[in-house]
View 1 (spheres, rainbow, N blue to C red):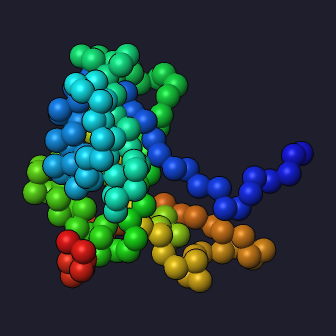
View 2 (cartoon, rainbow, N blue to C red):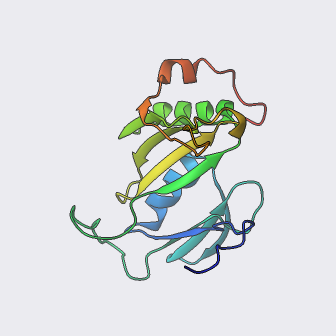
Length: 165
């Protein structure tokens, strides 16, 4: 077995193939609230949160007018977007409701709370917030024991708005 990867490694961004760049920007910027940081004409754009160079790249280089991959094929299952706290996740849920974006599901994983949906190109998206590691469920050996239970969306919506919203 090889040595584990450095614990400071993080996934920096995801680059998605989309069929319609304007439609994708309307979703990622107009609904989720990311900011456009750079654009390469009508073919590609980069969006971010908090002034980072980009968290999500969107392009039509190989996919303009394309269709999502059919079920039963390999590819990206979902992109997970981590929110800093429960109030911010509640704000995201309010945005989805306001824009009538359907949810594929919502779950309490013990370690996190998550909302699942698809972008306009059928890419899976998980919007989530982590709980404090001190309260993560653990088994008898002290190892993380994630669960999948229902997420109470009404309780999430009762969260006061995030100070940054």
